[in-house]
Length: 223
Ligand code: ADP
Ligand code: MG
Image (cartoon, rainbow, N blue to C red; front, side, top):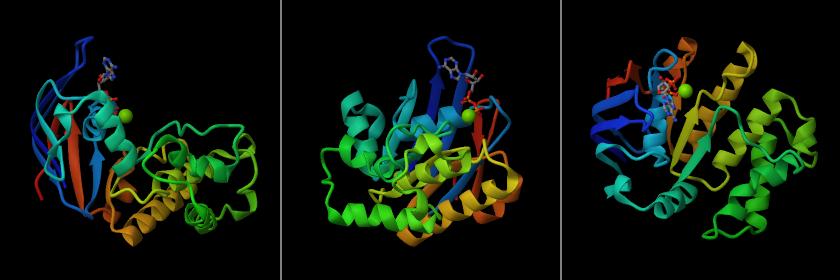
């Protein structure tokens, strides 16, 4: 599903370079990306998401070379095919949990916000134990609750690919384990592919494969 071929990426500011020989991830695979802070994990995820484009080499998604598309086309692809769970989950504070979950429908003109989507939002929120607060503004929710809203939002439009950047970094151990359990369960139910960055070793047995990033070098890329 995802192929990276001989990638080099350098930030314009310089100082850091990421190199990945070959990285291929199959449909439905659950991949953990580990490595010390500053090693390039987020950079790698942004290359897969098409937020960044490599300085050299190609990133493909289902045979399509994403890295040669325009900014606009990459954004469209991201909205239609990917669910992103990032570190500082960006929820819209004055909107309710349910409205936040349904945000992709407002951003992506390719899908319509119908009753089915609304039902699915309710089901997801129930699944993560947030039925009670579904109608409440997220500004009043705890960090753990917000994280779960973010997970539901990433999954609402049934994207084939879920990209998660240390989604548990701001949670305590117990809520972190349950948030990841939940994410993995939902991903397994939908047959989606999951790429998740983590530095939590406890979580690794839940994944099919572990990719390592160390000082900009990616290894463990081929299954
Ligand atoms: P990780 O996610 O593994 O902690 P990152 O991919 O965020 O690592 O960062 C890798 C390196 O790239 C770090 O040294 C970081 O300081 C640098 N870096 C990250 N973003 C930028 C940027 N926008 N411009 C220049 N350097 C950056
Ligand atoms: Mg990071």
